[in-house]
Length: 547
Image (cartoon, rainbow, N blue to C red; front, side):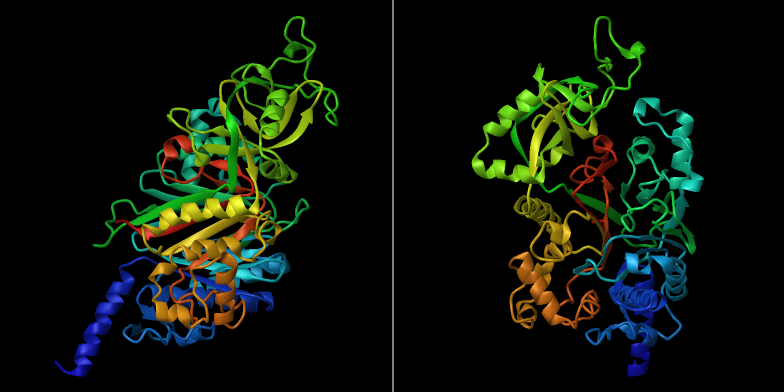
């Protein structure tokens, strides 16, 4: 066989392989006019996706900053040839929010995605970088043969959703499950909501019931604006300033995986805090802060009061943000005892606030750090001995106090990612982290993005690590320093497969949110963990081929 015939055969084989495997690409752009930044980010995402899928970038994609010079054995695609893009997610910083329509149109022109959503957020994430307080557009593109992608918005959902699972009518569950794609073959759903117009506490219990036993559900509260009507959310190229948008991936009904492994979606949620003291049982909930400092008078009706009681009585089965009793004693009294028993170093962490976590799965024999849904203690009533939280608690639940600091948050995410490293490098990832993390919590910038990427650095040959001037296996700060020194600034660094020193990163995009939606700890026990609204967490979704 001649060289030309051999090359043609290899080219055809490479093309078939590229078209019959999953591939992801992420792209990031910085301070540019909005449409230019969006085009650049989309081109970079497409270039990385084509490399990940077995090809090298087209000439148009090279403009985005990737050369594909390290892909000598891979097929060069023609200028107009590109893989199908089943889904794309776009994140823009506040600097580009006024031009959200232009951004979405620019991304659509480059990628031609079958389904696409976008949101404005406080900071965007791409590759190894978290771009805080600077302009940025980040794009995650997905080539997913055999997978159906669909979008939805609040316009597709019922107006009223039950706050408690017992209040959800069967028809409400069906009306949520349909638009969100919760049915057989469901793999993944991401939801982004405006905090001023979406009663997220009412939405998530219904979402939990509708998605029970199915795929991963994550999301976030958009953080682009602190005023009502200021946020932007896009479904395709349609931009809105309220409600929610979402994207669902599900296996196409009746369509095999084209002789390839299926898509596996895993979620890691790092709450970044550690339990202290002992487990406690909630023995009282209700409006015990009626006369507490700064709380004002109770507004409950006389009909809610028990006979001879001066305070309204909350039924034992009802959830309440106020905890009045722990272990049969006033809640505040018990909490003070736990705090006083802590070493001085632990007590110093109270300056960041006191947290209380409730066990999600009471059927476990033992409870570890990842078994609690953590909420903040926001107010206390010394006279009544009650505490107010930003969550809901019921009588009989097991709870435990928690504390958070940068060291604990670093160790928690590191431990979770060490476990993920055992499963190998992901095909792609989505990171939704709290806007209270980043440089507000950690000394080094881009902490969470680098920590997640670092978990898979072990596949990088030692001689390639040395090219950056220092090993990449050290602290997060050292890793970040190596990453930036290896590239040509923030806009080149996210080109994880094409930039010097970054070839073994994986396609990762995301954002800073004002609240993170996901399970507790990980997605391995979705039957019991449900879908929750978190705070101060890092929620990472990892896409892999099934083993």
